[in-house]
Image 1 (cartoon, rainbow, N blue to C red):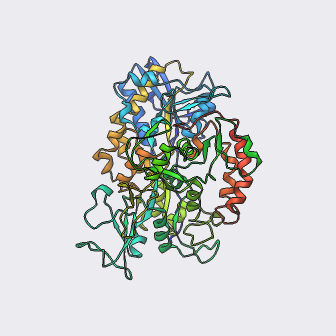
Image 2: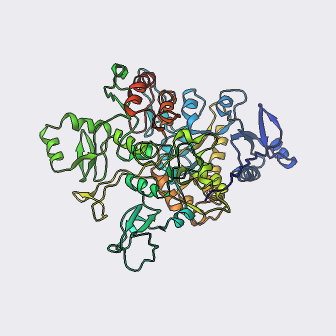
Image 3: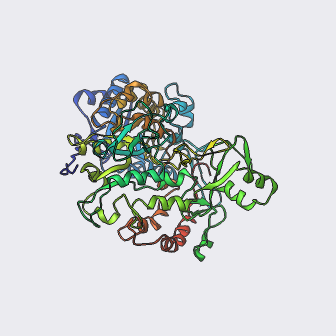
Amino acid sequence: MMKKLKQIAVVLIAAVLSMAGLTACGGNEEDDARREQARVKLTFLTPLNLINEETMQQTVYDFNEAYEGKIHVTLVDDAGGTALTQLGTQDSAPDIVNLGEKQFKTAVDSEYLAPLDEFLAGSETVSEDDLWENAVERFRYDSGSAATPGKAGGDATLYALPAENNPVVVYYNVDWFEEEGVNIISVAEDELPEGILPHGYYEYTDANKPAGVDWVKTGDVYRVFNNQIPMNWEEVMQLGTIFTDIVGDNNSSNRYGFMSEWWFSWGWSVGGDCIQLGFTDGVNSAEGSVLPNRYGFSLNDQGKNILVTKDGVSVNGTTYNAGDILSYKDRTYVEDHAGDAEVKALLGDDTLYDELPSMREAFEAFLSISMTTGTRVAPKPSELSGTDYNSMFGNGQIAMLAQETFSSYTLGDYAEGYFEWDVAPMPQYRVYNDDGTLKEVNETPVTGKKATHSTLSCYAISAYSTHKEEAWTFIEYLLSDEVQNEIADLGSPAGVPAVKSVANSSRYLESTAQYTAKNKAVLLEASEYALYGDWGYLETDMWINQWQGRLNEAGGVRDGKTTLDEFFAEVTGRTNNALASLYARKIGD
């Protein structure tokens, strides 16, 4: 499975035309004439790359042709990532910008963006119902202050619309699976035929193997991987161990079964998070810096999370249904009122099933994939010198890799001519009975939420634009079926189309574009529930800088050189101090 590294040359092709210190693309005499004749002249600042450049240039050309004499858009490549700087330049700010999600809140706080609520409400082209709800929610945001907390999602002001969806999924090496006798099936959980158990990975025996299936047998078992059902935490380790062969630390011959850089799918699945309003964990005296109605660093939250097992259950004024997980606020309410008759009754008959792992336990499960205690299946950070996870997957060193949908191009290019690959869901907390069926409490499966994150970019209008109506017309065009279908033709390397009806169309699902994933059903489902990463929670990510180094660096926690207790004792106080100066809110808080 090993192969030589293949270098990927990403070439940004742009004509050299000076305009507000930027580089305009695709200019020619015909286009220049259109611009001169247009009543309104706009600029569109967006990053261009090998995947999207041709399509974006054609999109702008077609728009200019359709609106000849009325509106002309000049495409400008944001090759240097200068969007925030350009938006702050009043006299030369671009009219429309494709802005990275990490830049979005800063742009709003700086009053660089124009509200879009009225435009969207009056649009006959763009329907909010046909956009990914969780993606739109991220671009509803009101800045906060010491006197008034900020707001995100819900009825907060809309300042941008998603340009695509880009959920993180598990990429897996099909050829390597076959070499190890892992049978791959692709069946949705609600469509499983009789005898097929609801697992992401399961080892059947002759005693429980379904009749009529033609599976390869390895030893005494049939190894079966279902690429439409999430593995639980134990299955990640069980399957990952099959591929893992660690000769020694930092050995280039090492092979690994599974790799994820992100803890989100573990923690979020059971209702946990890295910050919670008012959270303190008593690690040290610096916990006093968590002010009322401010966030506290909560990766060390050791309270058991609570699964609701019946419909219509009211807790602390919030109504929950079977399968929901209590919010942190309502979970702590239950903890504080466990002796009250009503709460006691709900706990007594497991209507409130308080046996889900804590955030700390979920975090420990994530860390177990790479820490040296126990059997690890992932490379440690110190083993990445001179390489990266993508190239290790492409070289046949990692069998399963959690990565963004956009990475289809990079990973597909590495693998081309060497092995076949596809995608599966990120892990989920799931509990099984001894016979392989899902454990149920009050007829409710004991599972966490399906969870992953995505990174998005968004289309926004500059607050300084003097042609906001025309700029909105262009955004409508970008999100029209016509343009979205062109993006769909690019397959998964361009992400999942922002418009759901296009993403669910045969044009996208059956796309055979170069380096596209086959299992697009997983991409669509993940797009429904993917959230933003912790870097998008608040107005800046400076609070993350207080702890992520000690977590991820060589010699840190994931490297097995720093214990969790040492980690929390070192970083909790300074993280809470950083959080004390921030006023934004996560969606839902």
